[in-house]
Length: 425
Image (cartoon, rainbow, N blue to C red; front, side, top):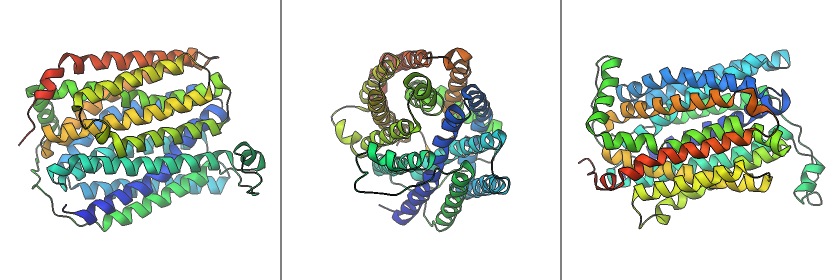
């Protein structure tokens, strides 16, 4: 495999920035739901950020295809360090952070996320031989979810702290005797900023030789976006596949950032330990998918495998809607981690094999834009006060399961055509 050292540095940078980023993205929704009791306020912030990424996401694909992917990484890590670091320092200066600044950190992280992953996968495709696409996607997934496991564990510690009661619940009170005070949000944000700095340094060290020379299009943004849409219009099967297979990811983001904090607080009446623990099990499920999904479905084609995982996800959402068990929620999170990450590995590999590298960003923008519009609609719906009352949040999970079911139809209808679609040369 060529460019091994470049890939290792890229994965390392992704790990360190993703670690603290994961803790921040766990801490902020819980802060609004359990500390401020302002789930609707967070829903508005999340909806606004998602709506803005609709326009941002359109532009991101053209950036990924137009400029060197390494330079894009350098820019977003530096921006994250400066913005989040400045907000963290203001928290130390004034002793607390206003709600507006906490919301800004969440929005900035979302914007960076929407640039980061399209760039990461396009960069990986650019410096990897075609025969290794599946392997590299699995490695990226394994690394990303290993980081999520660690960030989930640290989130539980940093959000709730550790005392003897906490250790007793784990059966470790006779072995360990120590206390860790919960961290303030600005302390978590400062750690987040430092990891962006470290990621910037690692990316700066990357040296590579592209496997294929990138075709740079210097036309207008509108023209480049049109080219991505035109490609999908010419190959509609890719469009149907890309939109339909994105459904688990859309509902998963809503589950993690908007629904689960309310579900745990209002329906289960449980603590943040259940929230962080559920996140850890989700990450373990995703890690398992990264390690074994290609082996599990080695005798199954990609389309059938994705349909199976969509059906499993539907069942998981309905179980959540019709139960009241913290243990079952954790199990469901493990299953959703497995199905979402497994679908992503297979989905991206399929797209890599059927979309040229110089168009991967622009076609990704089309899929991302549709996905953002769907998420914005659901965020707006689930931000209604109805879902924040009593146990009404369970209806959101019921609706989410139905949406995945509807999204599976195009893959089922065009099943034979999708499996017979020839990869690009």
